[in-house]
Length: 309
Image (cartoon, rainbow, N blue to C red):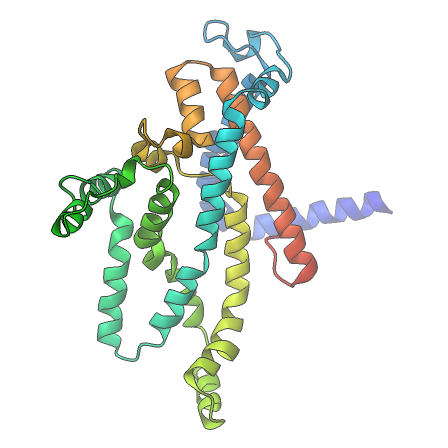
């Protein structure tokens, strides 16, 4: 019975493919690129379990088992990098509602021309490169010649070295991200709000609903599926603190709070040529993110009707 059902499913699938062969042909290049540049390189993950030597190659290098995982767990950098990565990630996650609130505010604007100009201005920081952004932060927050230094100088006070402070690093990192990406991240929420049937607002107005009540009972329920989906995806990259920005903001004064997993992997792997060790650290980070993604998706599916699969 099961064999006949499986045969029927195979024949049914082939009939669908033959009926829509043009669409599958259009999909083929994307599938080939995905296999070549995403799945095929995953074979290189095995160097995390080997004493990898570039001369011998991946296949000929001897097995090391969990040697490099244990080395990382017992290293003095393990608690530092994990603590910094988790702290910055959770701090960044706490700002997740800001684009949602921004989208709700933009949706309340009634002057279309002003609304378009306002949205365009809010999107612009997203297109600033990370190098330029960090350069701006270094200039503005300079204690001697920056904006902070000039403001403190007006009152005859000495400005703090914000970019060299271990206390301020995570705040500067996170809130500069908020400034740069809030407008861009709000696009998907604004798009979701644009699908709301105008008759709902008209009915609410006739019932005497205030603007806040419309947001609470119409807009927010409409955003919940989108919010949950993006939150699940965000949790899947919780420990994926961006390398480029953290590395550019890093210096000898703030190293104790700016050393995250991605910067440590770069230094160990490329600067110190410890390829197996860096691969083990990165694989550990990836597996934690994957486990968080599965867990959060399971919880969302269990307690609500929204999930990725």
